[in-house]
Length: 290
Length: 262
Image (cartoon, rainbow over all chains, first blue to last red; front, side):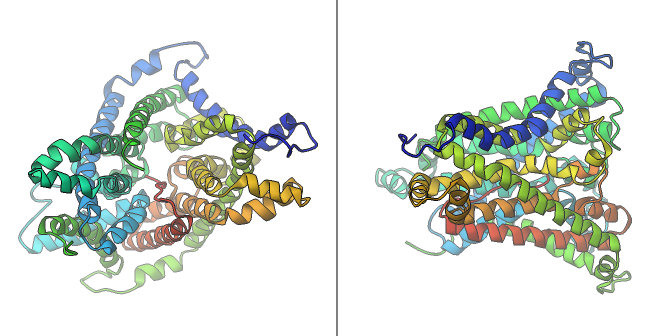
């Protein structure tokens, strides 16, 4: 803070209140209070009394299955998206290649990471649905995907679709970390007789792992919160936590508001853990990436 | 140093390019199908002749503009003041601004429905209610853009210079600070535009016919126009992101931001 001399005519406390009040009032009304109502409502029954029944209900039957499905698809697409995203990012930005490839990849990733939801689901239906272009082309080449048991409206189909926004997110997050790997380290290792494998085993990965893991945790949270893509693609064939909450809420009427709040509370807990892990890994990363 | 791409790298880049490009090509092919192996533009004609296309598009675009306006009015003075006078409060404002990452849209709508269930019809009965939630969804991105913008310019010196020349607070903010924040403000606006044009969760649960809800509705009934709408939606994302990236270069920082409807 700068020393005074600039003080307005009003007392500074009052000015601060006038300037900051709208922001705090707005976030209180539309973010903090709604979140608090979820946290409190999850532990209440219809009469407003304290109960653990709603929270217990999310560990049973279809609700538990929805959590398991959500966790599985998030973990699978975070791992696969993280791995392939990293390989592509390193291929484009790891040094040596022409610079335009890197620019093209990061530009496209910026678009693709934002291209999700309903349109993304339809793009994959047009590609790998029963009458999709790729399905038909493979069929005329003698490969019958649907005959072999594949369907886009399944776990693997949904995962394949998620990768369209997971890989670009990985690329955007990991390129700065790859830039932090200095060429001198690789040259020094090579001068000391290290092979490519030894460079990665003793230098590259020890430096990159917090970034890689942190980025994958971010991808996990990203997939866990997805609603529009699974809704439009599977129309409820695969129950996820998000679509389950949507079903409870559907039509503006909370059929069982406290169950919806308990399901929502579970989501907040999972994502909060993921974000705290990400923040912790980010602090480790900060030592190397500027 | 060689400028060639090694075979291993070329393989990964090629596979990646195929994965990203094939769905777009397939969507274009699908949108041009006219049955019986023929192709025409009937899917596009269908959309252009559908009044609901225009209505839902304009609704979403209007909501995007309102969201941008509300977010900027709330955040510009707050971020400015916190940078200038109350750096102690910065962690608090920053924490609130990243909180929407932990509270996804579907959770936010649970809370909003519970809290405003009994609210009057003029407030919850019109699509404008969506703006209340959209500002929250855009908050982390707009905050980050403005925070980076304020960091890049010396707001203390600018403010002192303006005030020593007799400018009041409004003049300082509108004629000195804002023109220097142009790139940050625009990049916040572009990301908000992309978020709101693609937002599905809140609108679907609250039953308003925004652009995404319309695309989903068409997809349930007409396959080829849905593919055409998908391409249009992709084009909107391109425009918003290219605008953002152009500004990113101007700002000199990394502006790779991720928002949107999953």
